[in-house]
Image (cartoon, rainbow, N blue to C red; front, side, top):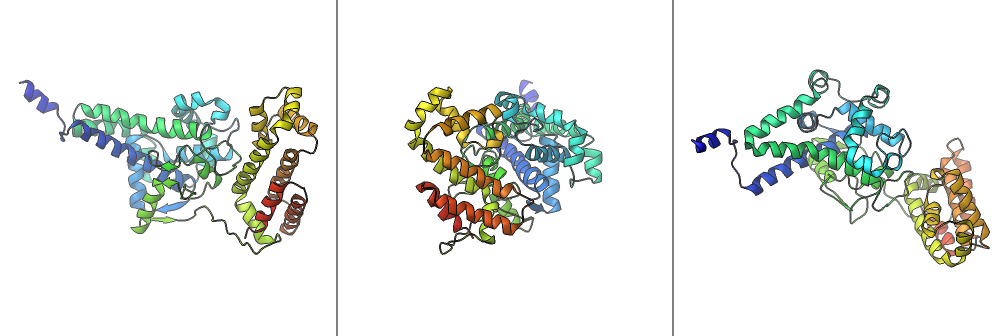
Amino acid sequence: MISDFLDLISGVFDMPWWGYVVVTLVMTHITIASITIYLHRHSAHRALDLHPIVSHFFRFWLWLTTGMVTKQWTAIHRKHHAKCETKDDPHSPVIVGIKKVLLEGSELYRAEAKNQETIARYGYGTPDDWVERNVYSKYSAKGVALMLIIDVILFGPIGITIWAVQMLWAPIFAAGIINGVGHYWGYRNFQAEDASRNIVPWGILIGGEELHNNHHAYATSARLSNKWYEFDIGWLYICILQALGLAKVKKVAPKLRIDKQKNCCDLDTLQAVISHRYEVLAKYTKSLQQTFAHEMEDLKGAINEYGVDKLTLKRWVMADSRTLQAHEKEKLNQVLGSVQTTSLGKMYAMREELVGIWQRSTTSTEELVKQLEDWCKRAEESGVEVLRNFSQSLRCYA
């Protein structure tokens, strides 16, 4: 009788424990792939086009496993880029704290989804067909309920556990880790204007989204990997879909071209510097770090005089000056100004001038080329070797 009852409640598939683990990992990975390929790279950033069959599969799967509405997710993510690390950013750990984003990432998402101004302003270009209006958007919670029924039918009572893992996967890894850790801890290939970080160089578990700094540097790129040692599994899937005629890549991050024969700045140099400005800043910051380390002994007196510790001063020097508070800028200028003939002070001032060149949107291209050439000339005559070397390498951009 007991065996009959167990047979009655058992699922369609009877597997060993590891079989259920594999099934759970496969299904959660499909969810992550749907988020990164469809919601993120296709819908929010228009980095690729998807065949209607593929697009609708992702929409259906996300309805079953997350209940997320395409228009809401797209709008919230676009606003995140537009207002990154400000009080209007829907989920910045810089503003609300890493703990809140990690533990309450889904709550932050749901709160912003109720903001109709956000949805109206940033949710353009998303599906508005009959299925979207009458099923996916209207009954967004019904999909996850249907997924529970399907899991129980297929796997029996263990299906409840599988379903629970599915429901937690996106909130933990997408809403929590990427939105939280991806703006808090990791390494940076590019000196983007926000706090974005690459968590690890191998984007597998979260579909390539681990390469978050790369993404913020080139938001409209369909490929998130940039260095030879980085791997973006989402890009692998996109390449497979494109080979099958089910996707078309529209844009990837540009490749930097170097012409070692060049010795003066021209329009190509300017365009290359602007296109690769975050990479330019990252290289400059590395030189700045070396100079900071070399001049630490000379800075000790000023650090003690103005009550600034070494780590804080380093953070101020490396940071985008626009992110510093007024009192932080004042202290930084006092410390740098108090040290005689400091290379660090020259490099810091020259960096601010270089950034200013590509921020002058109303200046003609001819004038910007002249300003870049003038910057390079002054850098090479500064007497600072690393600054001279950097300027000479910048002239080779083509």
